[in-house]
Amino acid sequence: MTNKLEELLDTVKGHRVFIQTHNFPDPDAIASAVGLQRLLGFFGIDSTICYKGAVSKASIAGLVSSFGIEMTEIVNLEIDPDDYVINVDAQTNNSNITDPGGMTVACIDHHPVVSSYDYRFRDVRICGACASIVADYFFSNDIAMDTETATILLYGLKMDTESFSRGVTDLDIEMFRKLFYLCDEDKLKKLTNHQMEFSELKAYTDALSTITVYDGVGFAFINSQASDGLIASVCDFMLTLVEVQFAVAYGYRGNGLKFSIRSELDYLDAGTITTNALEGIGTGGGHAVMAGGYLPFDNIMNADFDLQEELQNRFMNAVYYSRELQNLLSDPSAASDIAHSAPAHSE
Image (cartoon, rainbow, N blue to C red):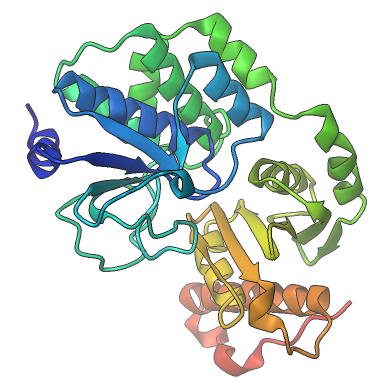
């Protein structure tokens, strides 16, 4: 048994265990949680998958219903203070995960470290999907994997890397090869093809009509309560436009705005730009190529600015700063005082 798996098992054995995904879990988060649950079960450790939010998007609902996956919203659980919680595809103190009420002791994630939270067990590897890390536990320890588990993990891997078009590492490629020979190809194809419900189509087309592009940066607004998947789909579409290298899509979520951000340029780090753009009014972060954020309306209740103009200004200034920093690194003689030179953007 590898040291990582042995360390994880030693951390949680003998305790009541909950596997917590990020809020409004996506296919990768669900797949990783299911894979981990089945891995722990192999060693006689029972666990419950929990989350906050909804799983209504077609790609998620199809996954859950097709395999009879059992997940429970945190509000419907009684998690005691001494129960053990494992974060999967998320990290404590990030904006996209709620406090479950138990003792968070472990983290398995593929995003950059967002805080110095003192986990007893931490396995954070920068790769395309968290499902790759969970799959690696099986294969590195010669633990038999059934067809259903392989299909679930491969679906999570495909979805989070957008069919291997973003953020792919050697680990993802290796896990894809091994999972592919074990999976149910017909079921995988069906899940992959069914990504949007008809009820979302109007909101999607309306959002596309709002797209504006400024100096390679695309913006789109979904003027309705929107799922993570819908916002992400609009953002992904914008990045297919020749004129767009950095995309920002956002829509209503609860009492605030949910953001999805994509970048196709190495020096325009989506996570860093989102963090900087929403500083003081919301929270955000993620990978260099893919990020997310949230702005609670309570944070801007007394603000006297036009919200959409303010958001575009903030993102454009953050992008401008990153571009100037890149210029500084590539040609120091051409650099100016970038901290004070970024102009405000306006329509």
